[in-house]
Length: 201
Image 1 (tube, one colour):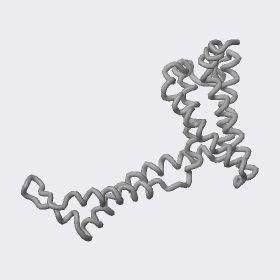
Image 2 (cartoon, helix red, strand yellow):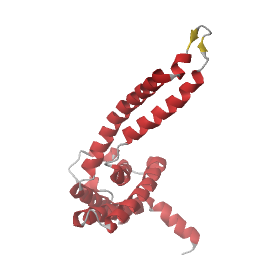
Image 3 (cartoon, one colour):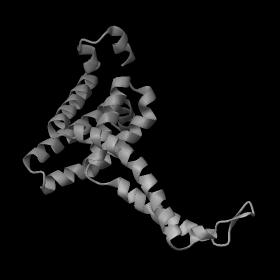
Image 4 (cartoon, one colour):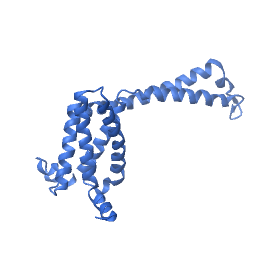
């Protein structure tokens, strides 16, 4: 098999390959976590899972129109689960708020001597406590917005990353990939799902 044939084969079976590898990683991460959540093997697998999850997400976003809906959903769901796992306990809202506070504080310095519409002097915004307070208010607003979004993302991330659920998700991906490789369609074809819905999936 020459290089061209290999590339053609990979392109033809890309969804199956992605699902199989993603499923295997999910299963391995779940088992490693259950065995030793502080071990180096678990952390290494989690890092590999994050990188592969990014690749999965990229493929899902660029190739989903050529895949069955159920395949695209499984790939995207597994990618999301693998990507968010290392960051489940990171407070991004605080980081984002601190960046905004710093940015606004620096930006307000440009208001020194500035007049709005040539009539309202805004110099006071660039000085003393007013500058500090405005910066922290902007940071608090950003924190509130990010905190709400982060809470939703992390809720589903922690739910899917509960190791038994992650293990099951991995098995589903593997089973889906095997059925596709063997030409037997999808798991959805063997479930008690209305035919109209199967066609859409």
